[in-house]
Structure formats: C-alpha cells, structure tokens
Image (cartoon, rainbow, N blue to C red; front, side, top):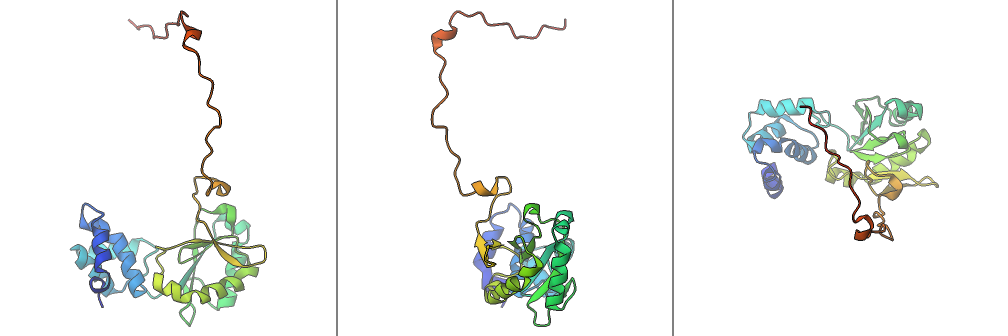
Length: 230
C-alpha cells in the first residue's frame, strides 16, 4: 500500500497549507516515516513523486535533519539530553542505567526492536533535568531508579506507539508522581511559569481612578517640542 492509497486525504490537506508543493516536504516525510517505520529509498522517492521534486532534493532533506531516520529504529526512540544542566543532575548515570538495562549502546536498537537509544543536546527543559524523550514525548526528572518503571510503561504502550509512529506528531508530557508512577501531564508553554499554565490571567478588580476633566483645566502645559538646530 502506498501513501496515496492510505493517506490521500491527509496528503491533500498538508499540501493545501502551502503556496508551493515543495514546502510540504517536511510534514510528508514525517507522514512517510510514521507509516513505514523509517525512510526507505522507496519512501523518499514516493514523497518526491507526490511533490513533483527530484529525489535528490528530498534525500538532501532527510540527510540534514536528525529526526528523519533512514535506517530501522525501535518502536520507541529514547533520546537523553546530556547537555551541561542534565549532566550535573545525573544524565550520565541515567544513560549508563539505560545501557545496562537494555543491553545496548548509544545509536543501537534492542534485539526485539523495541528501543533505540540516543544522546541529544538541549531539550529546553533544564528545570526538570534529567530529561528524556520517547518518540518526542517529554519525560521529566528521570533518575536511574526510575528506568525500570519507565521502560515497563513504554512496553505497555508499544501498540499505541506503533500506531502513532516515531515522529512525535502526537507527543505529550509525562512526569513521575511521588509514589513512582508515570503519568501524563498538561503540556506547558515555555513562555509562562508552569504553575500558571491552566489559569487564565486575572483582570484587575477595580479600574484606576480617572482624572476629572476639570482637574487640569486651565493648566499651562510645557512646550516639549525640540528646538530647531537651525
């Protein structure tokens, strides 16, 4: 089955967003990747044909962006941030625990095809370090002690992950509760403090006092115009 046969309506919707077809290359590549598991040569050529582009143009895009996979990856792609804040908070210990538990190194996939492990730089959530992404789902405050719980949860949701794909188009946020359970939370905006995300801004209860028109009547206003340099 081709992308046109399985996703024709979605393809038309994506292309309609753009003034030119070639601008739809990124979302169509994500669609192809989630459909086939990774971007095979045939998948890349199929996207090129849909967009009426030379295959070389699409190959260049796939080769440039790290979130496009041109080789098989696991049902879950685990990306651990190892930038400075996460390292100070235990990222290296987390990576070591994942490698030991899964029996793989970075850029490898478990024999059952369930997990691929990767190092990445800066996931923009330093306040919740160490941070891990699973198919771009954010998982906060992941310690080595929580690895078993995390992997068990991901294995239980493997069917859901296969259906949605590895491209993160449906990604959510997760955190651990005090009793060690992994739960989904509301995805928050980086531009507002987390505790205020679900609360609308509060309007002032009383407006500032208005100045009565007669209060400044007859007052001489200073001339604020700048003098001419001539």
